[in-house]
Image (cartoon, rainbow over all chains, first blue to last red; front, side, top):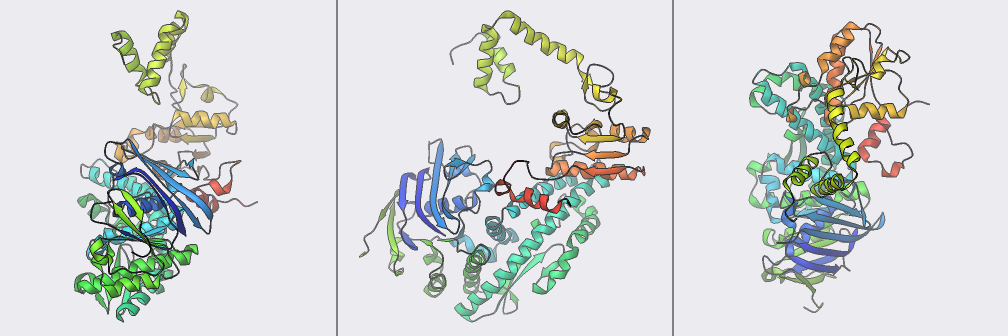
Length: 376
Length: 202
């Protein structure tokens, strides 16, 4: 999947920007705060309807403007399509597919597919479980529409159930009222668990290959389900009884949940366990090992996209030169050779390190993008 | 907007409280009421007052009526053995429009939703339960709440309540399916997956 054309209007610090993209590798150079990350943010938003930086979409509208418009023309297995969003200052998003307004934002998610890699992503290993869950959800949501709708319904059920738990302390709630929510929590929860488990099986395989080639070490990734514990490839049969087990477990932990005021079991409480040479990487790994694992997981996600959809997503690399040493970075770019279209940003001081064959170079300054001549 | 008179301003404000009426529409409607024939404006005022004073809930199913019982409950030609449970009056009228259903109704007052402060005791569920206890003619209850998270939770809760009564009753849920005349290409994935899992043998 490749972008041919990108248009930004009143988006962050871009007033009006049109960019024709002709190559697979695209390097954007510029000082800080000129708009490099904004460009990647726009591409990621077109793929996922979410910003990697903010939860209030209105923040992306240019100062003192009412709305922002972004769109991209893409070419992939599904032919040529144009995806676009109009984003209001109030955060409202209007999704457009081939210039036609769509009824739901979710209809646009995953038409364009992208994997984002930014300096903060070390949190994928070092941060809390929510970082790892979002990593999985961002990928799966782009790949299957049903995943995204199930996830949002699931989150609504958890919110309702938590509200009920809070009320239960005042003795107003009959226990059988929980059963109506538990049944749905178990239904959507088990479907999400199975989908994530399947994705992790494939991610684990690809990530292990990557780490082996970067550092020769042995990486293991397992899905840690709050219902069933750690799950590996051999646990397929345990998932069959997941739904009924989930209903039982929810009922068993109900008194504890009532005391805490939140639901302690379900995909919203799951995690990804990452081990290097048998030790949990989060607590025992060196900074370098953790970086390697993050690179490996991002590559694995690209490979998973390819496996499921038959094509590579866009790979958006924000300022990776500052975060990764040459070896990891070269590996990252090498292993995707011939595969994903890459958008990479770097500050000019570091640009000397990035000389890529066949790449287009652009300078980004104050919300303007200019193509640099190949000799530069 | 220029200064408008207090009475007009009040009218705009009141109309603006109606659902799906924004400030501009409210203003246009208010001007219409002022500028049209007096009979039309008076007719509207009278209709509002009359509807408020005459229309009440049916004692049995909570449909709107001007009598003790609504026209559906009073109609002996309708199947007395089936009750269709809906979350609101609007849903009842939608089902009636389909012309496909010839049984009775029970109109709930919304769905269970802890976030909005509505529990089972707030949605006229007790009324349904005591009705089922009292009427032995009822053979089937169709749960036709919306296929939202809240509607599904309400349906499940009602099902459990009915089962706990220990009556010999059939409880069914309205099917999840595809819109007729639509193209499968344009149906969202969750609807499609539910339509597949609740497929019918033919």
